Length: 299
Image (tube, rainbow, N blue to C red; front, side, top):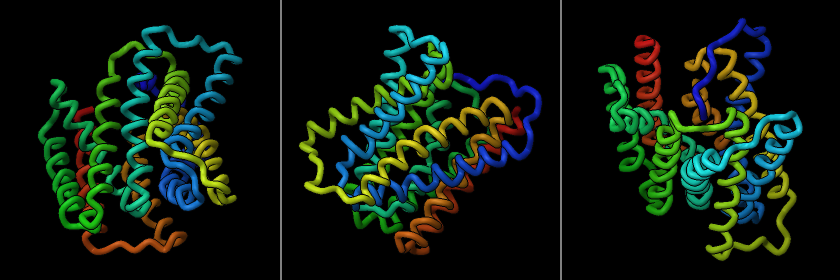
């Protein structure tokens, strides 16, 4: 995604609150939505991820073209395709596969490490990293080690590996895209969802995925929720926030979503979390907060 434009006139607080609520709750609830879709007999890559993003990306792309937004150039299509591969196939697709064996809340905790990997990849790429940011990276990575070595993830080796790949793919794709020729933010999102969705559908078909004989109403509604609210409504709210509030506030979803996901998993799906799971989440989120505060001071 291209860098957010400078903040214009301050929007009304009510709109900011609504947009934040959508990003916090809807994105936090997508982990539970994935689990419900899996339980409803929906194939993980070809439908829950792939079809969802093809639908959402197609709707958004059509609306943007109808409003006169320029289509991506050939070079821009290549860039958004790589972003779709990294962020959606590796980032989202691996989470969906992991949730076949891992609770939705635990998946969200693992994905909470994305800002840590982004900061680390930025440093490896030559970006300036302050002492405070290095401290946050160290704290957060300690939480990642705890999560992968001392939590219930250790009982599911496949889920553990998938939940290591997912945040790495998302973080790498985010850092790789910086400074590259991209269309407008919304068109970048639409192209990314279209390309990533097609890659996911093809990958699912190559895995031999097939629709259940009679997918349940729960599965159908869960995929619909992920498509409309998770991929269109919440993302639109997030882009609006990037253009109207400080980036630190817009990115605060990174340490709110896991808490929402864990709470919903416990309340709705009756998922159980041990002390090690909660402790690892607390350490990871502490690292993210330290990085955020260090960046605020540098700015």
